[in-house]
Image (cartoon, rainbow, N blue to C red):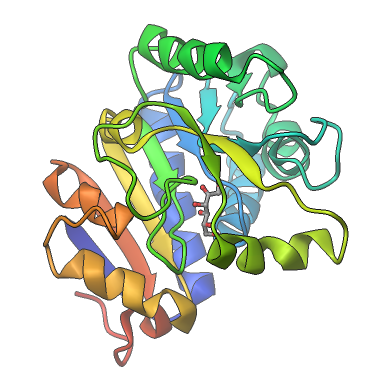
Amino acid sequence: MRVIAVADYEEMSVLAAEMIEAKVRNQPDAVLGLATGGTPLGTYRHLVESAAARHLSFRRVKTVNLDEYVGIPASHPQSYHSYMKENVFDPLGILPENSHLPNGETLELTAECARYDKLIQELNSVDLQVLGIGQNGHIGFNEPGTPFNSSTHVVELTESTLRANAKYFKGEKQPVQAITMGIGTILKSKEILLLASGSSKKEAISALMSGIRDENVPATALVSHPSVTVIADSEALAVESKRV
Ligand code: F6R
């Protein structure tokens, strides 16, 4: 695991965008695994600006998202479909037929999970998976206790995750379930880039850096993956900023 310590959110975002851009430049038909949430927003913003400035095409890029809420329509402003369309797909020109998220609207949830894993397999797995990290160490919506060999599945969101997400729903009734790529699915990615910013991620990052795999902290599954880069800012690392 390579850990890159940066000063702050901005530096994390610039560096992560550069890494994604380099991947697409080297492999124009790359399969990118993408996350939502607050953490990668700056990365996506820099990627959009840089791709426009340097005429980098995303027309052949394929994307698979980590997760989607169950029970809200794709058109809901807080759905991950909407987030991706607004922040990534439209501004980068990623084609609708090349961008994939779990379908949280279906009543056939088990079949949808199987479809999603099969899709990832058919894409020959993810070339570069971008991850955020939850305060409790979750990756995707894999909450503590999720087996490290899990495939795509439906989850009941924990209290801690519901609390952290409440800000996005502003008092509106929020979804209590999601479909998420499993930890086993995530581990099949060829390369993983985990981003962490802010002191609320300190404990989760410290558990990850301990190098001990522990199913109570889902992100520690990454310890066994051969190609993981963590970009974390000084608050998430709880250290004075310096590059290591
Ligand atoms: C989102 C996702 C989640 C987030 C995590 C951190 O697709 O998979 O695991 O990465 O909840 O969220 P933020 O970035 O909002 O702190």
